Length: 191
Image 1 (cartoon, rainbow, N blue to C red):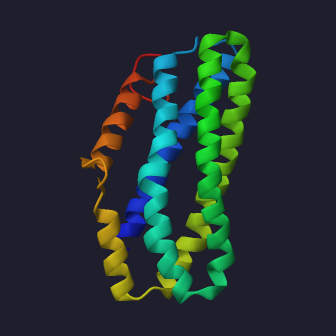
Image 2 (cartoon, one colour; image 1 turned 60 degrees about the vertical axis):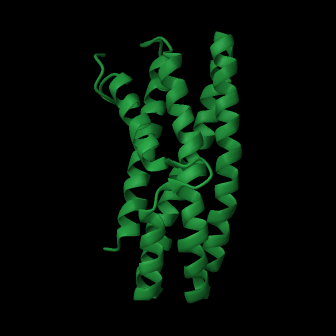
């Protein structure tokens, strides 16, 4: 397997873990089995707001999708859908962040937060499935060794040139903090 595909799948698993955890906590809050831990909820929402936008989607768009578009015209409509979903992802994540802020200020805003979470999650689950079931196999079939060398190099370079920070390390640390603060079965904190 190409390094970039392993990175994409690993990033999908990390995002899925945070998203599953956030949905689990929302269900627990809705069922009055757990009080809202806003510090944890904010960390999780911040992760899903920043991670796809700053690290994951730009590399897919600029490197994998653009190269695949040139090599396999049959997958172009799916790539266009995914790129549009990248834009919607940003919008839905911001709406989720705003809904969390309202919920933090007023408990009766929880249903709006839960609805924003459901909407974001539905988009994200379908999006990742489309990438893994359609685009990654198409890339494995269509891309050439020199394409993979450039794409693998881009995905191996997880530095944010504008901020001058190692973005993947920043997200690993945030993910580790989320897992340490999240109760079982999500993370390692006591229930």
